[in-house]
Length: 381
Image (cartoon, rainbow, N blue to C red; front, side):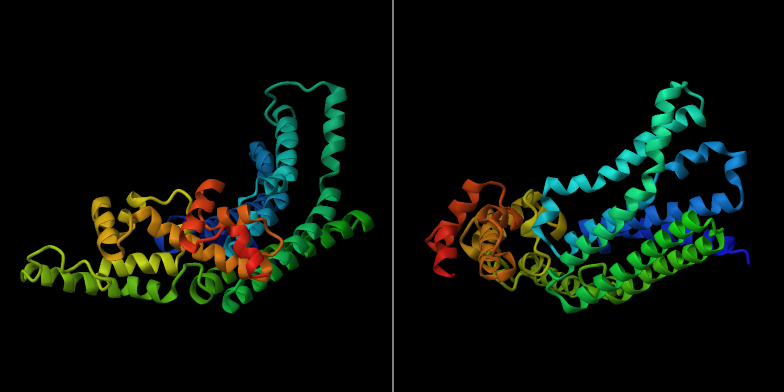
């Protein structure tokens, strides 16, 4: 049975789905960005199998540069990055997790360097060095035998930090599909090596499973378990009937009728722009962006930065910086009281909540609560 047409469809769908997730404002988040990259990596893995089946490497040997890089090192890392960003775990900001990319970089550098001689003939590698590279390259699969189970258990350990039952269900389902695919692939390759079986047909079956994974990501992630932040908001946006648009339209009618002669009447908590700002803070937690400023908020609200300041100053009696910091302080308090974060340092919690430095964090916390973060933690132990 020739599965090529299914694989071509899967590659196309993977590229399209990844592009939609990256480009659409409905799915704009760091977590979804990593999921899109993971789908691209999976599409490359399927493409390499297609090239092998149709023997494209014979006529286009330069494709060996793509095939010889071990993409199986990259795919699980991108899934891990998706999970830790989706559950908002502080480790996502740690530079230590960048070491997870080391096996992929090692594979990419050594194999590309080798192919510059063997495939492209750009230069000639000395015989002794080529032997070393060939020996190193033969260890790729054995490294995967260790790396893949490690990534499976390590990624799973972070799913529990999701506070949304539906989200946790979706992430667990995705995790299961990913590692059922990857571990089955490992078993198939290992069986072929140990018993000298032809596993090409099995690999085609697994590639079909990979196409199923892409379909599930599209259906469950986008339409059922919400890759975007707000399913209702997506539906309203698609229908062009969002509540915010109606409120703003109503406000514009009031302004046109001249009901705001003093220019102050609209500056209440019922102001549609202010309500939208509160929603962005409370539901979308924009305050966790350490680079958040008036200009970014103004762009999301569709108003000027000056108008943002005026709204916050008049309605809350405070400036924009303090208004955002108050949300950050409340987030810190919630995390301190949450047993899941009892082993995290106060600074890590502060940075996770959007503060940019220890000094800013401590000053804002003390101003809001009258005590230091450490005193608050000790008081609530």
